[in-house]
Structure formats: structure tokens, C-alpha cells
Image 1: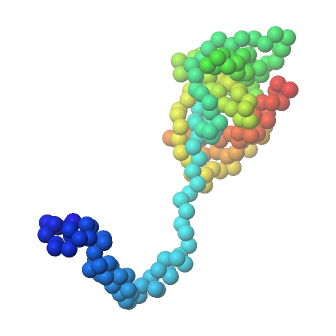
Image 2: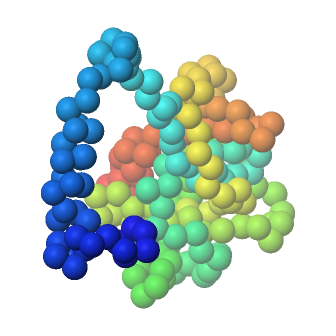
Image 3: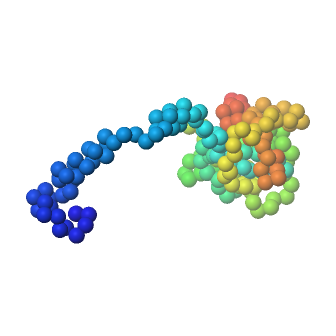
Length: 201
């Protein structure tokens, strides 16, 4: 079947794999002596330490005023255009911005700048977005001045946050890293959500 079909045994065996000649050749191939150094080569390969690739984080990088921040991309539900927020009756809280309609679902929006003691942004640039995150079936929205996109960062490049960070920001910071010539603060998702829950409790 691999040539011109002229083998006289082919009509009887139907296929080369059924031929005793081929089966005998295959058995001889498996029983041939091992090449010199075969055992030592594979013993060395098995004993060699496994080199794992560095752990990477998938992050969404965004800006609030002049501060560049990041969160793990798995937390994000949507990056939406800004929209009108509905005030919550009988609730006056400087950190609670209101409710936003996100695909038919009401999402509580907060001021992340206020929560983290960041400076307030100046005039709008047209790049503002409403970021929506979710953890443990709780959704939160917050305004950002710009979204740079999703980046992959090796976990090994994270460094300790500087002592100059505001205390509220430092309490939810996992580390800092350099990206495109900017210093980006990576927020700790669970700690941030815990701080958000305190705001509305």
C-alpha cells in the first residue's frame, strides 16, 4: 500500500500491517541492541532539574489622575463608556457615587480615587471609562481616567511599594512594577474588595 501495489501478498493480507514479513521486521526493530550511551543519556535527562517558566500575571492597567494602577484581568467584568449614575436615596456618602445600569444589571459605583486617597483628576480627556469588577458575586464600578489595556507581567518583577504611598493605597497594594516607562501600582484584589465592602457597610 506504500508503493505501486505490485506485492503478490497484498490481495491476501489486504494491508501491509497484516503481513507477517512486516510484522517480523517490526519485531526485529524493537529487539535491536541499544546504541552506546543510550541509558546514560536518558538517565541524565530524567535527573536534570525541571526549568519552569516564570509565573506571569495578566493585568489590566489603568490611570486615575496621574497614578497608574493595575488589577488582575480575571476580576474585570467590563470596561464601559461613562454613563449617568443614579443616586441612592437616603444615603449620603462621599465615596459612593451611585448606581449604574450595566447590561440591565444595577452596579454600585464608588470613588476609587477617594477610597485610595488619590488626587482628583482635572478636566476630562475623553478617555474616561467605567471599570466594572466582580468578586464573590459582588460587582463594583469605578471611574478611571484612562485604560491602557491588558498586559502580561512576570510576578518576579514586582517590588515592594514605596513608603511614600498614601496609607489607604498601601493597605491594598500587592507590589509595584515598571511598564512602558511608568511605575504601576498593582492592587491586591481581595483587599480592595474588602475595603469597598467597608465603604457601604
